[in-house]
Image 1 (tube, rainbow over the protein chains, first blue to last red):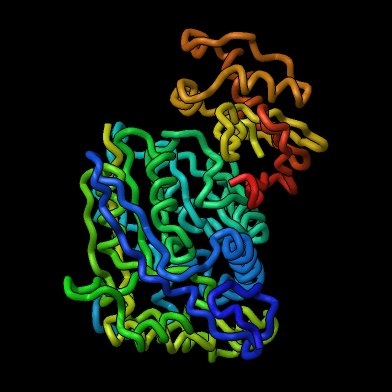
Image 2: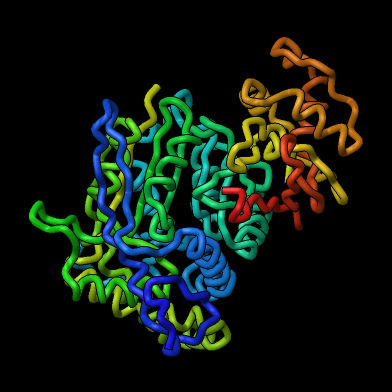
Length: 342
Length: 122
């Protein structure tokens, strides 16, 4: 029996035969440095070696999306993110695409991104771009150049094909790259977009630092991501049963760490980003997972799943846990926006 | 990968101070015609690193860009056509981008550059 309870096991290890690591839920503790400028460091609470996890995690994420992307696309289309719904509505599959578009529009509106020809973004980066749904939408909406980055070579390829098919090949381009080491010089982009990719980042500080680095002066940064609930002032961490639930979800979706929306706000503050705003959209995405589950039980959904691989199926099996997490007010769907100082 | 994209990519290996521009080694490239949009070209020109574009275009056998360029040239149709062709119509399908400081090669496959760093480069 392995004694490596706190280290990352490569994704090829069969589920059930490896120990359940608690590596994925390390409460992120933030300390404000005492020297002058507030320097905030995220501290991992377990002794996971970052080097050992990072390579394996990136590979796991890439393989997960290489395998699942096709299934998702065939049932849900080219936007790999939650739809935005009116609270307490039941959503059907035919509502999902408008809802996914609405999610993009709500995020842009919340951030106050201008449509004005003089002020609208001209260069955009889509961090964790999937098969490029957001990239193509934003490029079309603003007539802008958009660069997408993803860990999955298959997604990048598909994104490129879809762009060419839509006549957008001269506006958008896709690269295989790491959001924690973006291959762009400083200050390149007017709009920095991360739609449901933050969950995959093992180092939230590095993630937001990179978003800030590639943002041009005055640029807008938009992060839409899954979080856990904010901790109350008396709490040091989530409760054990909450941690246990999130751990199960982490494994299936290659999520290395959860933090709260407040954690993101604090990171943004520590990086001197301005106009920091956040909102809880959990009620607006609540209809989404039941709709996804129902789609898995349609003939098309079911057969697609069967044709995909274990990683995709495991992801599908874990969907009820997402619903449980939302119902318990543990999992939150948050938008965080800010601007880079001029 | 178009040269417009190449103009925005840099090497971020830890410790590298001079990761831009990446040298272009192209094994396979194609020309894909795109409608010329003069407004777009005039708008993007200030953001373009000219020497990087020049070198990359030459690597693809296109030597018709002037050594230096300034905004006054944007009123010339001839200049716009050459600028447009280099920036948007040349697509590298297979090849590599080479870090000017370390020589590290980032592969380009089916038009997509892979800029992932190895563990020891981070």
